[in-house]
Image (cartoon, rainbow, N blue to C red; front, side, top):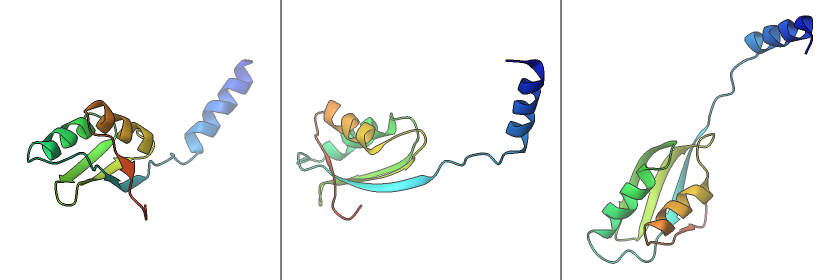
Length: 95
């Protein structure tokens, strides 16, 4: 890249507004949770996903509410985390 073009690119980057990550909330249905330890395991698995800000997993109903930065994590990554912990999940209707 020519020096002039590089300087112009830097100037453009400096004046462009930063792209803000959007915080999203999703509800995952986790039907395999059936004991008091299950929500704890699911919560810990989801908290390990980069970008996750908060998790609330409950036994009744068997679901996990997850708040995350959509630029750092995806719903697929969240579902993969629960599946890897032994609790397959799906996106609950209405999300």
